[in-house]
Image (cartoon, rainbow, N blue to C red; front, side, top):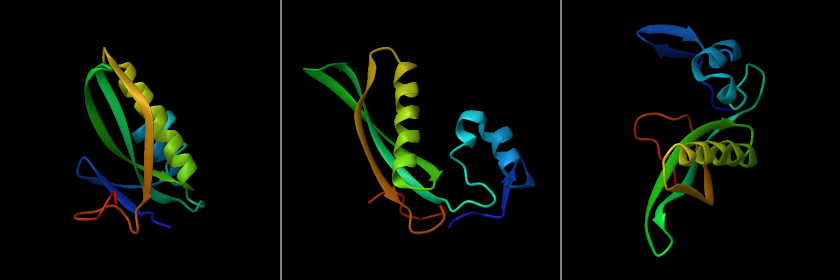
Length: 115
């Protein structure tokens, strides 16, 4: 399980609780954040977006971090976010590619987030 006890926000240290997660990350994202009693790990999910026409396209790779109980939940959250992100950009579509990597430790400076 990877769960920091405290997070620093705007120079103040706040308890990392489900209520705080909902207030800070929003209700949609809070369901994927670690709760006080659950076993959650950190996952990095790579998604790919396409801009332009199929015969002449530009692609964007997105690497996003998710606190989730398993790969399936992390991928589901990342796919939902990728669809939302692509829908906010004209001519952009999520091509359906999502690859996940479970971080071996908590995110931090120099930690490998995808392999």
